[in-house]
Amino acid sequence: MECVIGVVGRDFAVVAADTSAVQSILVHKTDEDKVMVLDSHKLMGASGEPGDRVQFTEFIQKNLHLYQFRNNIPLSTAATANFTRGELATALRKNPYSVNILLAGFDSDVGASMYYIDYIATFHKIEKGAFGYGSYFCLSLMDKLYHPDMSVEEAVDLVEKCIKEIRLRLVVAPQNFIIKIVDKDGAREYAKRAYTGDSPSEAATVTA
Image (cartoon, rainbow, N blue to C red; front, side, top):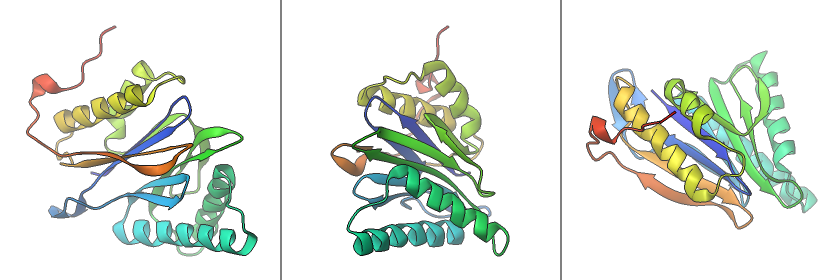
C-alpha cells in the first residue's frame, strides 16, 4: 500500500511518500523514510520491495558521491536519471530490482525537474506523478488542480489533498507521510503529516 507523490513547481520540486514499513498484513514501523536525499540538490522517492528499495537507492546515492569525488563536479539531474535508468535496465536482464522511482532535482541552468522511472526501466520526464495504490486517487486530483507555475504553498496543498484522499478511499491507507522539497537552496525535509483521525468531511473536495 505504498504511495509516492511528486510535483514540479515554479522553481522547485516536492516529493512525498508514506512512511510505513509493511510486510503482508503486518505494519513493522511507521517512520521509514522513503525519500532519499541523494546529494545537495536531488531527491529520490522510491517504492517497492523493501530490500530492493533500500539497496538500490543507497547504490545510486553512493555512486553519485563517488562520481563527484573523482571529478569534482556533481551529476546533473538529467544525468542522474539516465544513470539510474541504465542501472535498472542492466539489472532487468540479470537480477531485477522491484523498485519504482520519482527522481527530482534542481540545476542552476535548467531549474527544477522530475523523472519517472519504474521497475522495468521505463523513463519519462514529468511535471507531476505518483506511484503505488495511492496513484489511483492522486493522478486525477493532479490533472484537475496542477498547473506548472505553482508556488510552494500551492504544491504542498495539492500533496496534502492527495494524502487526505488516500486516507479516505484506500482500504488500508498509510498512516504517516513525509514531504521533502528541492530548490535553489538545496534538498531538505519540508514537513511530516501524521494520522490524526481525519473524518470524511476533511477529505479533498474539487469543484468544477
